[in-house]
Length: 350
Image (cartoon, rainbow, N blue to C red):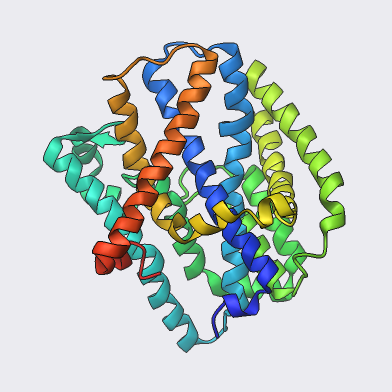
């Protein structure tokens, strides 16, 4: 039985809409590299935009992706050795192989051309080694934005642990994941801790058979709490930077923001957005390819103009998002029609 057949159509539609929107958010996060490339000093108005959007609202994409992944995965998870083996084979094809494929392409580009702008150069390869950059062990992979796939694959490997926790101590497990994310030092841990709480949260929701459409009445109070955290976090970052207190504020902002965005997806402007629904099919490919495309666009900007000022900087980042998404989506459609086997390989035969 397919996972989607276990999800009611309205919820499935919300997942599709969010797939597109969250990939746009991911590109919006990384578009800040365009400012880092051309601005020696960021104006205050531009800093405010960064503090609210790329540094906060857009970053809701990763925790929500982890939550949705955990929820969908555990709808069909079976705790036996045979099913576990089949699952690992499937996730190797759909997650690990695309991860390795696109890292390998970027490494090849670096070796041939000595660098990929704003991703890395041959000195990085000589220092860390090809295998470490390819696998992303104890550092980001060469395409650093793909760390999400690395961590997601590890969580799939740990599925029996999550399953036992969700059955025996679901709420205590949530508290433990929250404490690990909040207080455990990241240094020396080969994957990011940020996805732990959200992936496990999705697991608990799945195993508890929670009605995902049943909490709409909470939208306003949860959104108010999120907005408070958002404004306090952005204010703190603007005046004091990313100190220890900022990280506590930011992480709680992510928790309430993730819930808020999910609740908002129940309303017509998002749930029934025809454009977002149409684009959902290529969202994974856009995610996989956006980083090198974005980096080359930023590099090519120097031949056209040098961004300056707050409003131009905001417009420049939004334009980078639009052009990057359009190019990656167009490439996906082209490969689907002309080279379907290559496209299937690139996206894990999805």
